[in-house]
Length: 291
Length: 76
Image 1 (cartoon, rainbow over the protein chains, first blue to last red):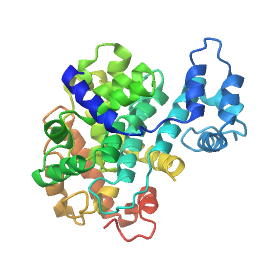
Image 2 (image 1 turned 30 degrees about the vertical axis):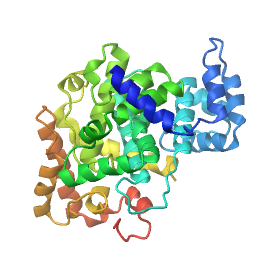
Image 3 (image 1 turned 90 degrees about the vertical axis):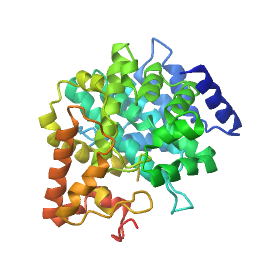
Image 4 (image 1 turned 30 degrees about the horizontal axis):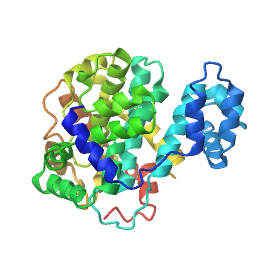
């Protein structure tokens, strides 16, 4: 990130009196993952400290989203079947979704938080679908990456006030992309805000990188981050084309050719079936994650 | 799909209710999409799904619609 931009984002975030914090159980898990001798039982015990989280994970583990045939009745069983890293990703997803409110008093606003969450959820689902198709090693990480890719927009929406409204209004009135207006009016974008927030929350480096570069995946060189950012970048375009949720403007953004090269296993002619798969998985995820 | 019932609150196009409205809608949707190798097939895939959904109105009330709009009054 450019130093001047970083400064501007820092000023914005420093003006926010209370940056939302992640729940204690997430922070404990984060710490636990630093231990190379991490065990299923240890992780399960941490999760069990939070009853709401325990219920959410069991509900998800038993949902068609994961598709396990056997009923999963304990957290230990869920952790064993889903996997340690994947459970960590789920806890992160549930935690982030929990700190930003879905409901708003003003229903007539230009950027409803619920619609933004629907967009983010769909990008998470689409990233997971694309990741599985190209054989990405940990598709659950992509789900989280997609889910949080626009976290900067949520923070802007919550704390920027009139300036954020101006970005939305001008984007609508001038029919210009939200991203372009962010740069012009704010001097930074949600990708940069998201990057700094993800750093502040101590998210894994991969997630920080993908959040920062989801509009410019071609700038990344490390293969796993570059693949991840390319996938989220393409997923974002597909979800906007499908009209799910609201990402700030109603345009399908340009897809960077370098991102398509990384997704070469998915042919343009198979897009119809890819979209259907995303739609089906999105409907399931919506049922189990947002309601 | 939610797109067909998008409110004018956060989109400024009319709801797509007939096949003749699909192309103008897609023109706007893909206005900023550039010309990468996926743009045309993606537009065609979306077009195909929209045509199919308009042909089978029951498909319009997907789970997402029901959940977002349980009363079935549209999002306006």
